[in-house]
Length: 383
Image (tube, rainbow, N blue to C red; front, top):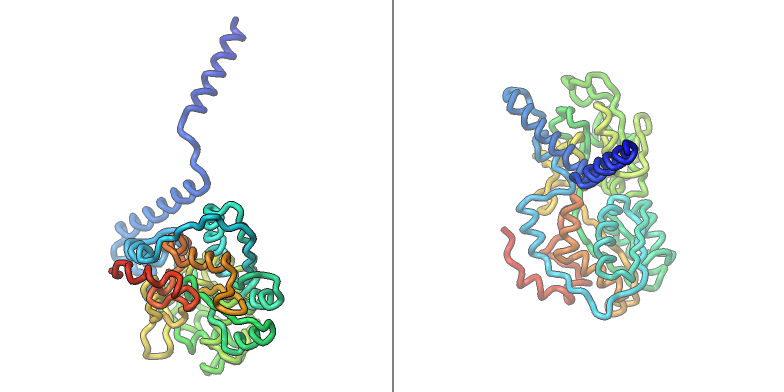
């Protein structure tokens, strides 16, 4: 009898535990931790109102990539609504290229596959140059390129394949200079970045290897400046080098090559003296994006939703999907429809959620202008 009562008691306790509140999943736990971090930052600011704050180190500089405000939401609503096709699409769409676009494309793929369960969107990364090489070889249907193609690249692709190149910017991004969140560095000029990253530093007199070389008053003193970046096959580095050090090579003394753009920012989060080059969408709370200027005496501009959209941030760039077809009329229906989805309200919502800046609604790509152009005139004006 006692054994029976003990068994019943254990069963009742188990049922009570099962009927309790469900355990939070990983995303809910991460969101809770972020809320705690933000609350802690607010409490610290309230407790120390006179504490010095590094330029750009406010709450906006640690905005979560997976959140967007009313301004962004209003802009998303201006994009046309995506309408699914009947009969539904089937088949496989292969996209290869930019590591900076991998998370965005994976998010678009999930949304598109939820509409068409018999479509498989395969996303592979490795860099913009590798994506273009795969497209040229017929190993993918679209190349993900986190910069605009050069005229020479377009000519080479068209000559080699006998087909026309179509480049569609599905979102905007920016190449950003990251430092640790506690680093008070106010801004950087193009000349300074040349001295930091180039091996020949043509735009400045001397190389910049230590924080004291950059600013004698830096709290980091004579500490070396470890530099984190991805391979030069990535569009991120190609854009940066073209702007800050054209026709020059990267220095190797303090250079660290990371496997992907997110790990570059991770290093800046972890190491107080670190500096890294990565995309705007890879921002994190413990790293800070430094405002940059074209040169001494010119205003330093911080990367953000508005400055990227209006191109006032010097290192703004397009995130492109590139495809080949004999003519505009012969573009694959599946490829064209995926581009339409990316340019829809649903697709741009995915962009905003993943921290990428929305596409330029006022200048839709030629390939989509005739397909969705009529919707843009009916959209409400931007606020």
